[in-house]
Image 1: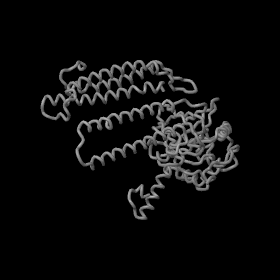
Image 2: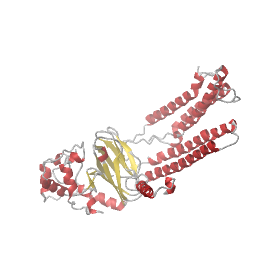
Image 3: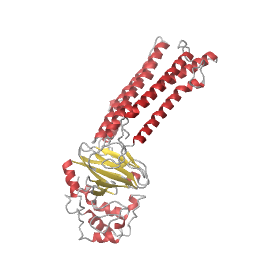
Image 4: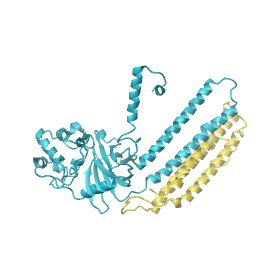
Length: 135
Length: 345
């Protein structure tokens, strides 16, 4: 319902990019936790009792998939926000008390939030490719 | 100095400034400074710190220059399109790129610092307000000590960190970052010292009244010397039994809490005192190790270390306490001289 492309901007369309960011964050941490718990790999004997050296490689395709979906949804949201803001033809601050300016303001704010969420989703996915085991 | 102060200060102020700067710089080196690294992790983190500091200063100077330019320029204002471009590049794209570089650098560092240790492991248990230290040799032999850790240079030694009562934190700034000691949990830290020397560690998590009095001595030795020392401690040296101190120690119940190998004293509540004569300090790194300080600590324990579990033995006469202290600090047979603070300048 929230994902449906909208003719007009509203609070739902404004909340979409950060919501996708939060869900992607949750997804990455859950998949990493489940992967490490299932693979186990906790050594109980010396020389490293308690340490888990299970490889996280099997978890990378999940992160790639989840990140691709999240980035695509954010891109769609940004494109929609670009449309709501009037394709950048009008300069901000869009602070007149008119329905048109309200639309442009919501669209522009959503566009900026989309950029922030896009970068954050990439930052959240990065550890999966730089930290390669469950330690 | 005038450069640092930014104006030409009167002569007394200059002297004050110079003294202040010397004081600040003195804090950058020494046995408890992360800015004077002696270990692999501390060096890597120290390099990262300097890079970030230099980059921050450059960025700060650029921002200041921009604001000076903006407040002092005359003539036509910029077009809003040009201003928007500057904001986009300097306010969004550049910070994002810099953060990405820092993030990748930091994430690449983490697995490297968590690489497993080599053969020797040292168990450190934090208690209010001291450290129980046990060297666990690969063949299963254990060597007990307290408040002092010796390490071989150039080896990765793994620390197994636990706590008995509350949360403590094990921090030897010249060697590595800190790691918490948490009751019911086992944490690990690997130290890889790169040069020999004496360093000071500290508890870095508030743990009670004497938190600030919970330090420990670290001595990094050449691998051969360390190996020889550890081998010589596999069988605890016999204490000298000829003195009254031993009898007083046992008669006053000290053995209920303290262990002195070779005697009936086998308590596990307080620090193992077998190798006390070798340690550079007493009372967990807070007093130089000499007879006077030990006498004073035995008789006024809770004045020196508020909240300590050991009661003050004020009922002992100074002579009796001195007798115990003398016995505890007599070098054990087989130890190659003392390492007490009063024996070195």
